[in-house]
Length: 287
Image 1 (spheres, rainbow, N blue to C red):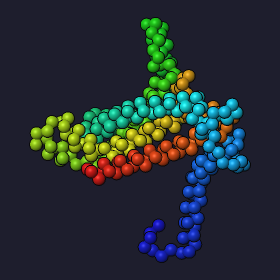
Image 2 (spheres, helix red, strand yellow; image 1 turned 135 degrees about the vertical axis):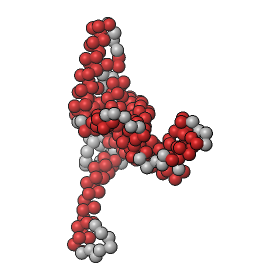
Image 3 (spheres, rainbow, N blue to C red; image 1 turned 90 degrees about the vertical axis):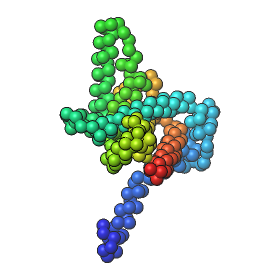
Image 4 (cartoon, rainbow, N blue to C red; image 1 turned 180 degrees about the vertical axis):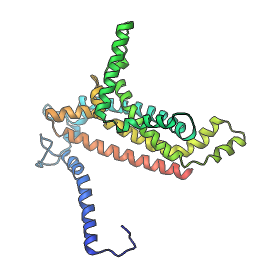
């Protein structure tokens, strides 16, 4: 749409209608879920029975709120733990990968780049099954050959971390690489001419320039890990993450506590995205 050209009334009406329908489709389910988190009903759906906070705070025989629901709280803790480790690994390895592909020249660079981005185009279900089969095969080999029971090769938290890391690190690499493409290499050369060593140049100049991308990609990595379902489903052990636990509750029937959890997740992810955006913007202005 070229704003300087005159627009017909029909076009303007159609454009506004499209925007209304589009954003209604995006946000209406979220709004309904948030509203039903305060519904005084035993079922996580309409009709509206009245306002209540018991799905957050209650500790009654017939009604347990999220703050007293040990199963859901444990699954939230597992998801936070997994997301934290995945974020640290993905940001560290992804940033190093960005340096590798943007500032180094070596043989088979394009082939390695293609292999690096391939986890993003592989369905999460296939990725999860492949990692599970690979880890199971290694576990059996170590057990039969050396009588070693390696916990890392069994379904569990650490296998979930490795499974999520395998594709989230790629996303971090792409985000940081996009920022690194805009970096002026002459700044590094000038710093080294003034006596700085390679480590000091990277720490005080290059990473300072990359800080907005690192912060933003870290926030995205954390959120992607926290809500991941497809890959995690095949790698999780006895400690279920929150998405897996919610899936089990929805499948078997649940109370509006699931809406309360959704409300807290929407609020938390929105705040995290806002803080990440403000911090990245402030860092960008500082550079």
